Amino acid sequence: MSIDESNPLYDACVGFMVAEKSEADSWAKVARLVQTKVDNGVGDVAVLKAEFAVVEKQIKHDFGVTTLPTTWRTAKSSSLAAARAGVSLTDEAGNIKPKSALEDEVRIKIALDRPVESVSTEVVRLLTEASNLMHLASWTSVQQRHVDYAINVLRVARGRVTNA
Image 1 (cartoon, one colour):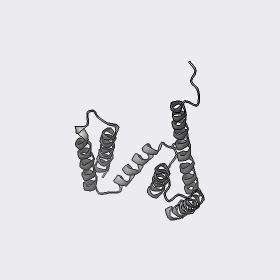
Image 2 (spheres, one colour):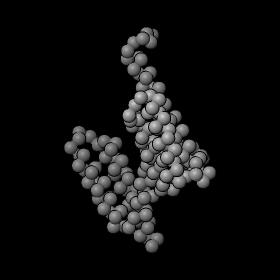
Image 3 (tube, helix red, strand yellow):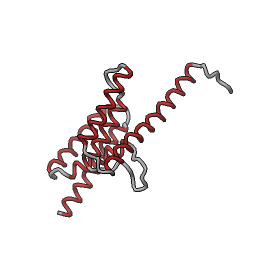
Image 4 (cartoon, one colour):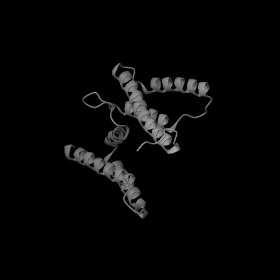
C-alpha cells in the first residue's frame, strides 16, 4: 500500500517523528554542554544561567518570540538543577541520562540533604497525590511515578537511619 506523501495525516505523523527525534537530540545537546562545563570546572550555576540567558535573548530577538518552548525551558531547568545538586548528567558509560531519570535522581539527592522528618513528609505528600488521582479510570504513569519516587525516597531514608 502506498500513501501519497501530501496526505495531511502522513505529513502530521512525520512531523511528530521529527519533533520527537529533535527533542531527544536537543536534550542531549543541552545536557552534554552543561556536563562538559561542570567537568571543566565552569559548572557554577550562576555562570551557566547567564550563558543560557544570553542565548535566549538572542533567539527571542532573532525569531521575534517572547517565550521559548516548554521543552527548552524544562531541559534548561533539569540540567541546571542537576549541576546545582552535584548530580552527573551522564551515566558510567558517558551517555546522557534520560531527563526523567535525571530529575528523579536530583530529587532523591535533594531529599538526602534534608532531615529525616522532612523526607517522611515528602513521602506522605507524594502518596497522597497519587491516591488523589485514583478517580481516574485506570492507574496512570503519573501516579506510578509518584509511588516509585516515594518508594525510592523511603529506601534512601531507611539507609540514612540505618547508617546513622
